[in-house]
Length: 263
Image (cartoon, rainbow, N blue to C red; front, side):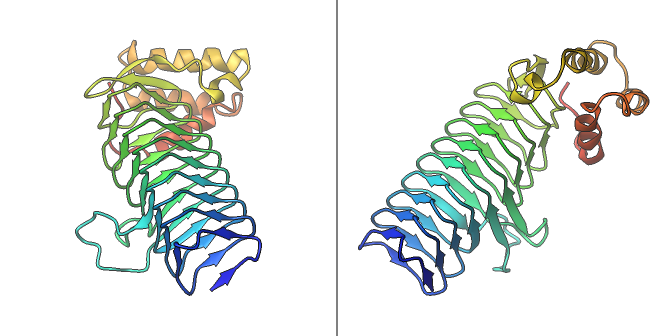
């Protein structure tokens, strides 16, 4: 066990031998930190939280009370293999958040980047990959193997089906169910979710120049208003790739997409 002398741990919390606790970490009352957990400096763990498994937390994260991080996943094939959970820096989790570790049938790791905001009661399933600067609203859930790219937003009480992929700058409206992949910058809602336009308020969209923003609108038209096949749209992307960096978002999306896109 390695606990920094600058960590603050409530007297009634349990830190098992084999855990690593960095400087300026704060662990509130009635928490359990298991062997194999690594907590980076400046991270705050709210009361009654459990951090377990081979879980690595970066720096300056904040976990609300009653969080359950790194627990055994809900895949019935899981047989106790040493799979992992890795979370980056400056992520904020609300109360009652749950994040499960990976499976050997998947990548073996559940992975989250930096600067994400995860609200109360959110569940992130096994083998999910969450990028940077994403937002997930209250009581929403990602099933196993979901990929959430940078700057994606999910509203409250949403359900994302296993193996779905949400591209850069996507916005899913409140109380939606997503069962297919959502291309970059698309706003979708409903059950099952349908495309509702371009997410012009996305951080990623606003970072584009006017020419590239216009191109995103053009691609949306091709996807949803011109009855073009996905293969036809992909061929048009290849023609434009060298001239417009934003095309890279779409190339990377379609290289991984396997469930078809929302229609």
